[in-house]
Amino acid sequence: QIHKEGNEEIRRVRIERYGWERYLAESKAEVRDERFNERDHQPESLRRLKDGTQRFLVNDPSTGRRYALGVPSGIETCEQAQHWMSNGLDRLAIHRS
Image (cartoon, rainbow, N blue to C red):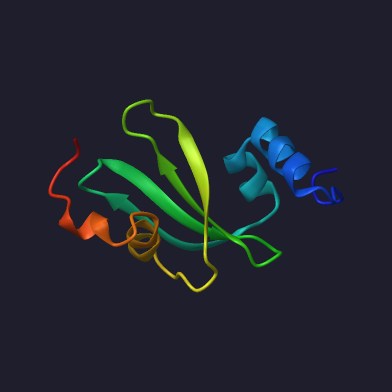
């Protein structure tokens, strides 16, 4: 049902209900990169879906909730994804607030 859904918003809601990690695993999304982020003390993963879109999987350090954030297809590493997500400000961060 998820793959056949034409409405992007409905598709996103269905994936969130299904669970991003489960969806990525069962849809055989390619693992592009994985790392343990020492600064934030959490695992990160960069996955490419069959349609060419990419998701950067991270935890919210304050709530522990797992997110699958969309990043451009040209990104190849978790470090690049985090740099892109922070608009370049992440390199200035010394520790978590």
